[in-house]
Length: 205
Image (cartoon, rainbow, N blue to C red; front, side, top):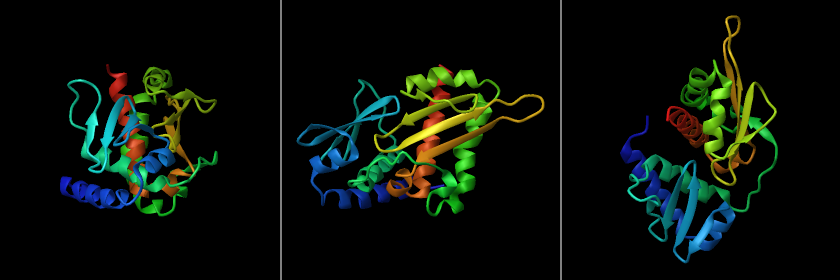
């Protein structure tokens, strides 16, 4: 597991690269809202963050909100850096098809697939409410399927098949091919895991 120091260093390295570009261009290429000359607004899961230029400091928009987790900051900054002029392809791929993903596949299963099955696998309908809360769009797949755009150019689809006495529950998460071009395989794991754990948290409210 990465330590706080690792995330802190990753943020510093990414910020150093981002400040070489024009802030407005970064926002436009990432599909993010350019709030003013030095602020980008980011709708991330069920939270809204503001990012300042040139420090790339984050703050949550909601009054009294907690500090933005450093791991989320790094993921979003990597997204900004990786977008460039890339466009969503409409071609869906499995996690294994992301270049270099083989080494991280077990982490992907542990952090995203297994929790998804454990919480929603015996009652696929249960995912509906939290999925809609995160602006998920229902798709015709499995016993329950939803498409999410956690970030504008990083669409994912979550698909569930309910388990029963005869067969265990199954789940899958697929990505638009662009995700593998924007993110490293490790970042893709975190992206999927953040979505799943936010769905789980909302389901218990």
